Image (tube, rainbow, N blue to C red):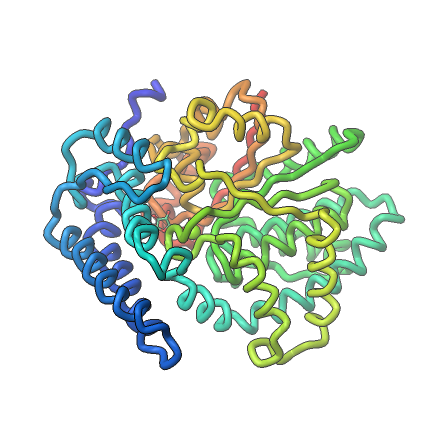
Length: 444
Ligand code: F6P
Ligand code: MG
């Protein structure tokens, strides 16, 4: 019974949850302390802002200490925002718990809200993004991959235009698979598993073989079902695709490219991108990251190979200016709730998602929330693990996620699980980011 599957706790020995709580959280907090210090050390900083930075650093250090000493999670103090009550209600519902002995999903979300509470309560640091420096520097490091993808997309653009006039469904489908895989592996920032094919490749056997090979590490792959859903529904006049984003920088670049492709290929009529309302899980996209992406892409200091980018970037911008791509955010995305609670906690958002042609959830955290961070047997059908967002929900859900935590469902058979366990022992295939899922459910 789905309700009996318990969620993973940070006290579960040998889990990613445990490893994260014991070894990574304190480092993440230290990163924020260092970042504030660096910003406050700038010559031109306002003196009162500088003074306030000390108090902020002290407050952050106290979170870090709490984690290191495994102190109890305590109610969040009021910071004037309407959501605090709900957090504390949820904490009370969890009951007595501490950093390394709490439900992983709740504890981790709570940590990011606790950081934000400190900034919200400040006078000079209210809209400051403690992770921006890190996001920017990581993006700049992905220079080669960005330039490569830009070149690939300029090529694809020519191909998709070509494809509008020919009826080779098989080739169109292969192109769709390739673009989906770019957005998928963008979540890993490791593109070594991509096939990287030309239109010619796609049209011949080697192309098909290369695509098949690239899909080896996708342990639940419903891409054929997504394609047939598109085939069945092209007649629909409005086909808005929603993408619930994950990380800024490189992954976000692949997502914007994917959005552009979905429009260029005529699969969707508009795309809506969902960002987070405050800095979340280090690198998640907040609204200021959008302009930041374009700022970076425009910079020949960061991306000196301009030829393809100069063609591509204005084109991407145009999608935003024309309203073909829009952005939105909802407070629900930065709550500790799993998406099983979406219908009850965010009914308006839920109704909107029901109307969407397809809702694409990017990344690991979204997947954890979709599956309630539950310790499901790996062969559990995706539909079942989705709970209220599964059967008869009316929401068409596609998850593009590289496996970086403890939960993974939808593996077709136990014998496949056995093969994976042999190939990547100790649950590595669920955690190391080299395996992935492309899981689709039509909510029928
Ligand atoms: O692995 C730790 C972690 O912080 C998880 O909590 C989270 O699921 C993941 O990293 C973030 O990954 P993503 O950006 O793909 O959601
Ligand atoms: Mg993320």
